[in-house]
Length: 301
Image 1: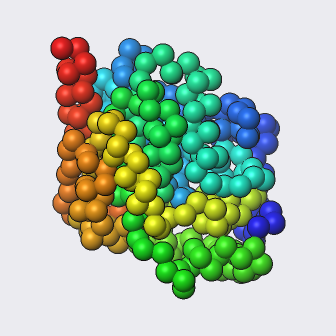
Image 2 (image 1 turned 135 degrees about the vertical axis):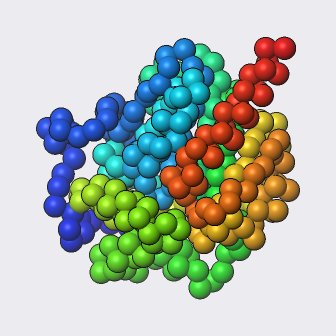
């Protein structure tokens, strides 16, 4: 799909404009990445891979909880999200997995295995990273993953494979589609408003809608059973979490995910929609902390 600037994208990401923005920035091979590395310096590192639209601010509640339990966190905005570059490249899982690999290496975090968390589309990125760098992953936490729906000829994602159609839809209706999508992610109306404001503010930067629609073209979010199966065969201790009222990746796929991933532990989070780390950060943190602690104890013994 040809790069475009959509209506409402009235800002540019430059070295100058980034001086007043929250977070830190590092130039990687594909572009500048927006990240935050925080928490106890001697803590095990938890790395987050986010979903289709979210900036790193999405993780704020969870990282606060993890820091309180002695864990260090690395959150970043995937290319095209937050304040990371809107790259003119193919937005697929290879791009995002490479971003994580380069970021952790450049920040000197590869001396010991990491604890990797992936949510929604980010779960596919996390699984791809784990498959390519299995020795660098100590534990893998998958939250409400995309990828287990059955591909259909009339699926919107299939229709968007046409560059002409994708570009037309993105330019004419992209922002409206985005806002509708965000409204289905969480249960609490106040959190819907907070999430929408967070995402749309970052979508004022040129190339944001292009990045999302190019991702929908090139990163399949259905029919990914083989990736789940491959991840389950890696032997990496895996934790599977799911909101019981998830309307984006419904609970109907929970048993399939369990069968393919073979997680050491799984938990359904009550009264929770699609974005468990955002909606229920304490509950998610409790699960991750106990899972990481159990892994560390086994290694120490």
